Image (cartoon, helix red, strand yellow):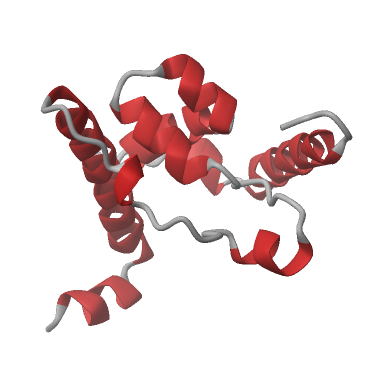
Length: 131
């Protein structure tokens, strides 16, 4: 059985795999920074966000790639400047990678409140004068 087909049958395994990959790239960013390199310079200078390319508006996740790379360099202020949602997302990804998905996240009410929070955050980002 291949890894792809086994992850389709077990969404928890797929979530753990994705979380581990994101955290590994974040760690690689930190190691590259220590070695004098940068993963940010390897990113293309094109629009990475499909939503922003279509509408010209930032999505709630705009800046998340740069935020995770900054987090890997332990540049917390830079990570916050790119996207403040990186901190709760990184904590959640660490829990997921460890296989410790909190039971509270399986509750639809909590997920709905979290999505409402992201929506409010996004509306705040769309206000004039906000990055």
